[in-house]
Length: 261
Image (cartoon, rainbow, N blue to C red; front, side, top):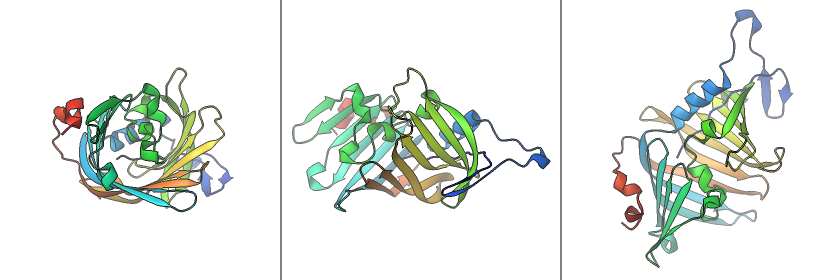
């Protein structure tokens, strides 16, 4: 559960919208890209949250699979826990992500065992969806793993946004070469993110768009989040069924033992 923000400056026409330069006559200047990313990061990484989500995976042939799960997050996204409710074959399965998804454990009730996933598993698809574990538990990755550049202003999904380009830092273990993010100017909520291939920075892999953005407990929240896989022609639709940003969550919930409960 999270969000995305936008920033752009350029004086050209592009597909999907008009990009305008900053007005020279007023002396107004754009914010620094790093400042925008910091504000966005603060908005999307709430102190704690508890909610119920639906996740529908739609294949290129139109087949659908839907999961319902409870989601818990603490320490501004550093700790995340997912417990599956539906379908019946997945009921009771749980995934624990710590250290912004650098450490991942999975619990399978049929075997009663907890298994720690390899480090590279953070780039794998979660339950076969178009979201990777890294996408779900990124935490401060936008700040720690990427350098940012402000491209300009652009309208996206009906919102005036900052458009940012984030490039992977040398030595970072981030799973993407670069990101392009549109951040709503009014509230610094990211409405769209493009993810580019690690080996080919020109190859667009996925695009995330947030719909039905509402203020929940004074926090901008995308009630419907769609990840479009541009290479496989699939998509995954996540919808928030309920959410509480004032949840009091004990640390014991985010442990291997907590997975068994």
